[in-house]
Amino acid sequence: MIRKLMFIILFIVMTTIAACVEIPVSTVSRIEVRDLSIPEAINANENGIALSGGEVHIFYTGNETDIADEIVEIDDPDIQLTGSAIYEVGGATRLKTDVAGTYTLNVSYGGVSVTITYKVYPDMVLMVGPNDAFQSIQDAIDFADPGYTILVEPGTYVESNITVDKTLTIEGTGVSREDVLIVPEAEDGNIDSAFSSNAQNGFIIQAHSVTLRNLALDGQGNPELTSEKNNFRIGVVTDDRVGAWNNLTVDNLLIKNVYRRGISIWPTSIEGTHIEDSRIENVIYNQGIQAAGQSTI
Image (cartoon, rainbow, N blue to C red; front, side):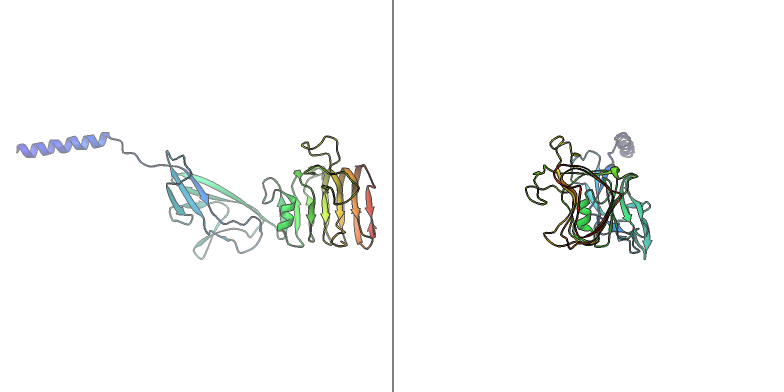
């Protein structure tokens, strides 16, 4: 009887101790999504994007390192996926690409969420801007296929010698042409030559049927360079070193503070150049426009 009583007392004591001790429970402090394959630039299509390769890295309270406590695949059943990007096909989760727009993918685990945003562009259109797939005009040109339109959002772009080597339309989306400002990247050599001595040209044309529209170029627009120096050699120049490029359209451009010319079209065999609603200001050395061949101004 005494032994039985002692056992009951011991059980009660142990239960009381267990009730008083707070057993730590791991809580999620943050999650990160890594290696999710979303293309840099997406044009609208019906295929969607498979959730391939994405991992959710889970960090518990107290872990301040870059090494996760747990790693699971993004399609793991414990991971919650929501947002405008999600749709199901054949039992598999995919990301939408059928209509141009901005989509969100919310990834949640343990009460913690992260949001991934991506943009889908109209067919054969790329966007350049601080929050777009491309932050530089040249990067968009290099990515584009012939026939694409590159839309440049308002802002200042520090770029020289933007080489257009395929048939493209490059157009500012601002209300006025001054909303999209292109300024030189480096100091120009300021000599009477199109391409030598560290030439800082605006656009170098190396393709037929290029259109430039609703843009501004300012050779004094970069405050990091010599003050009041015209650091664009030429605003727009056709590259006669590699060919004669026909059917260039320059529409609603402002080109100012250049050294040699505002627009230079050469050689004389060029056809179909069209320049309209554009303004050239403050050319130091030569003409505002040299338009060889058959041109309409």
